[in-house]
Image (tube, rainbow, N blue to C red; front, side, top):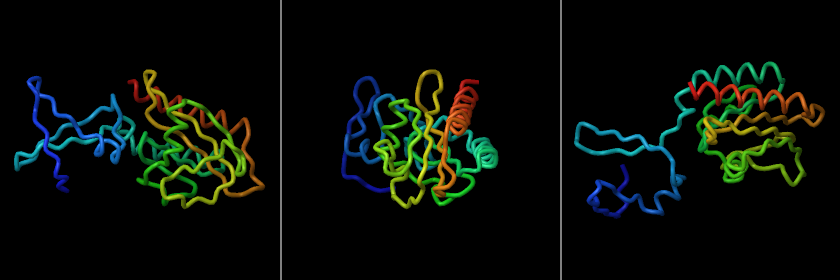
Length: 181
């Protein structure tokens, strides 16, 4: 663990305030669920909880099926990082999503874009991207955004359209319903 030099007191209701600087760096937003762990040394560990992160194996299988059917790279993310990739861009696995993608999925917009469009965004934080088409659909669970389904294509001769939009929407809807159960 890293020392931050920040000390906080527990209030009379047992609460501790997580400093704004730490929340910003770790992308912890108001209302985000947190898991609480203890270790054998008596330390308390707070970890950002990702509901869709518990479905990583299932998401990976779904991404593989989606990539196979669509012929495009398929990525599935939670609200912070990519949890499953297939059909290319495997180097995105466990990488942070970009702020642009975070804003896009939080807006609950379904977007199909090609390079050069104003709606075309960088999806990963490191920017190692060379795709020319993208389809982004947010995953909703009980009204909350929990992640996204993304289709990417790097071949200009394989544009995306209504079929890819319906595939991404179907995948996002299915994954959202799986989380509700």
